[in-house]
Image 1 (cartoon, one colour):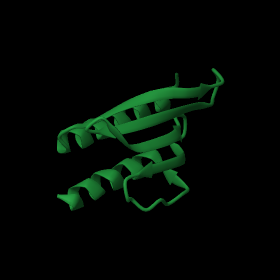
Image 2 (cartoon, one colour):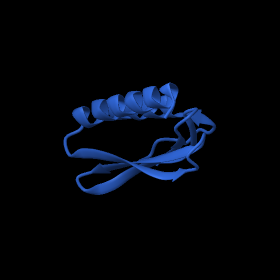
Image 3 (cartoon, rainbow, N blue to C red):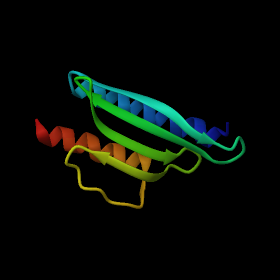
Image 4 (cartoon, one colour):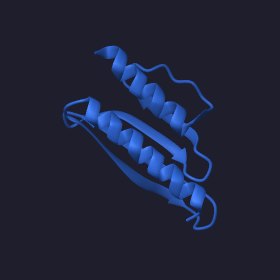
Length: 97
């Protein structure tokens, strides 16, 4: 895995951990949905609140490009980068409180 992909993965985990620290009952997991083994890896983030899925984000690991996402009532804006989407979700959750 390239250094950039590893850095992206670590930043995504950090933001997801921040999100789960903000919300009681919020959990997440990351699935590898596709990889050609060379330069194209698609990861899917699933977000759950009280065991109910509230979000799904698919993005390309190598460049952070978001392929598709949904999260509660958050308005979708594509094209987007994974960090932007996660920061929008954190901002959305902060505004809900």
